[in-house]
Image (tube, rainbow, N blue to C red; front, side, top):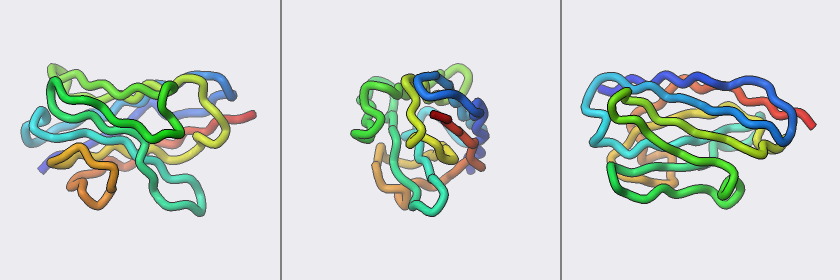
Amino acid sequence: QVQLVESGGGSVQAGGSLRLSCAASGRTFSSYAMGWFRQAPGKEREFVAVGSWSGGPAYYADSVKGRFTISRDYAKNTVYLQMNSLKPEDTAVYYCAAGPVPARTSTLYNYWGQGTQVTVSS
């Protein structure tokens, strides 16, 4: 079992930055791919970014590529999502998730956090 707790959400103006954190506890953190997804009101949950195991590549949705960066601190069992140049369309609840492979499909993840709200105003 893996428990995930997100933090770092909030309200920011367009062009601003936020850093989301996802603290993991439970089973071996390093053996999981860690992903970020988001869900805006009235929309389906969508892939944002995923980082694989140590040394593996990260993948991003086209909509955030060049603006968001995923990273992980194995000593702290924490994965981060640095979000720069935020846009109003980035407004959503952001979720971190853990799964066996670095996938873009939410159904391939076994564990989910509770979500953190990000609101970007124009």
